[in-house]
Image (cartoon, rainbow, N blue to C red):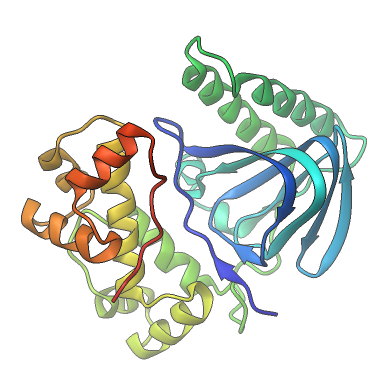
Amino acid sequence: MNSEFELIRYNGKLPAQIEIKQGEISTPYHWHKEIELIYVLDGALEINVNNTAQTLHTDEFRLINSVENHRLSADKAKCLILDISYEFATQFDESLYSSVFKVISGSGAEEELHNLLWQLSRTVNESDLPDLRQYSLITEILHVLFVQCRHENPNAVKEGENIQSRHVKLALEYIEQHYREEFTEKSVAELLGIQSVYLSRRFKEATGKSFTEYVLEYRLKRAMDALVNKGMTIEEATKAGGFPSKRTFIAKCKRAYGITPFQLLKQQQSGNAPLMELNFK
């Protein structure tokens, strides 16, 4: 089974991405670091998680754990998708990698999460400080998950040929925590106690990108988020993305997106074009 790695871009000041999908929905098998909750607002949505299919109907939801393979399919549906930053969640417990979240049907946790997701769906079109309300609901959802839905993950310390390799996951976490610093694939491999060639192969298999490509993409994501969503200057965005100089940031952005940060920011502000996919050469 082929599965694509998805790099999630968060909404503004939130430690998460919130989006509404509607109409015909079809995604390839993919995975990401984020904890995902999908709440069906209307219609029927087929979700396939680790080769197990399930159909969700109106007012039902599903939790997908970090790095789980999944895909979505619907002829016509409307759903809320919440992707919560794994890095944000680990701030409350660094041993989260050894756990997995399970929502028991008919439990109090299921009822609480359902209510919170319904409230979150109502904030999407609000104009009165929606980010603040959404932040509050996201932390409430995490609290329910940590307190009522957390279980030991039997795969947490096992090495294997799949995307749940602990070494790859730890490498991803290291990048997210240290992207403003200087490091190499070799130095990260040494920290994990493995050979650089082993990490390189596993990382490419898991993400579809080389270690260097992923680090650049992550830094650009952070820099562009600072520029577009947080109103920072080019100089501030350069630091936010961990680039050594403005010149380097501009050059890397132009190589990845085909245009400079100035041009990309202008397009974003005018609303004429969405942020383009990275195109590494």
